[in-house]
Image (cartoon, rainbow, N blue to C red):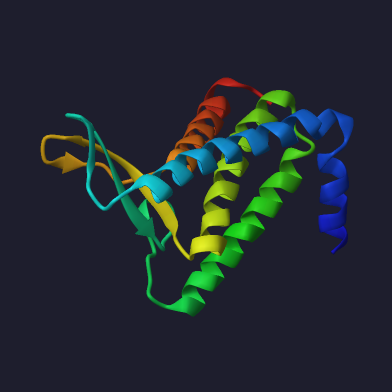
Length: 163
């Protein structure tokens, strides 16, 4: 429990408060988008244009529906694992430079958004359906966008920024 106590204290230190606010901002954007779909979706596909639809599905797996299972024990294990990863990433991010903190904030904020849904709904609402003709990408949500941008930035940073 000392780690969690130290994490709380470190998150609200002056040098980390902006990053904590940024994580909260990512989380709020995700919540707003999901609430719009959850409370306004009437089980009909919402056609946006020829490449984008909104179609609510409930994902019990992890990213892109991987490891979906009907087993409650497995679901709870994966949820606990995701929560642990969020804590570890948050702890690691506290001692990074500003660029790396921003990258981690994108990932952490999105992960917290999906983690919240796993706890509240026992599934993550995915609704963004990108497609071209009959090819459909995995349905995803705003949190997944932030996580993906963070991971891509992390990979690119590792190629172009020397430690």
